[in-house]
Amino acid sequence: MTKVDRNIRGFDYFKLVLASFIGLLLDPLLGFGIAPIIFGKRISEWSNAQFAVYWMIVCFIWGIASFFIIKFASNKYDFDFVNKGQKMEGWKWATIISIIVFTLMIKYFNWNGVKIFVDFQSLGWVRFIFQYLYYCFEVLLVVLILIFGQTACEKWFKKINIPYGGIIIAITWGLAHFFTKDFLTGIMSVIVGLAYGSIYLLTSRDIRKTYIILWIMFVL
Image (cartoon, rainbow, N blue to C red; front, side, top):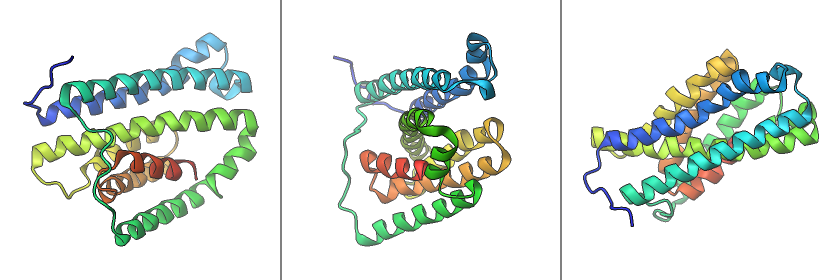
């Protein structure tokens, strides 16, 4: 049995943030660097089968990375991934719904429609299925950045009611979209990242609820 470290510092959790973010960065590294060499084509020229193979490889890598990060945090730091938190009051659910509606409005104007429908029309059913499977694993790593970033900052700054995790997501996953997508997507990702931090606190740090809500916000 792994010995639990009882003298855990903020930087210990921040290292897990970095590990999760590096996991996400493997996607553009593979997509723009390695995969085009293997397929002999730029990403814009890939077939549906090549996209499917690529996304399955990324999902596998992200799944393995998430498994070991979660296993390490559970065994070494005794981190509780199944905490249901306190019973949520009605105002918290109302606030969460308001945040979801706000972010969906931003995405609607950015995508010129509802994202999931726009994606289905532009991707076709094969690429659509594999891309949305890919989103399941991307959301998982984003949630890990969120919860470990929140925990690290709480240890550093000794306050528990500030959505630090959302700030960490905004300056990692959010800002990365300026380089991998476009300016508007980058702005949207930063705003949405900040919203994610509030969602986590409003769910009383229930990771399962947070994952489901963030996945809904991701795909709609």
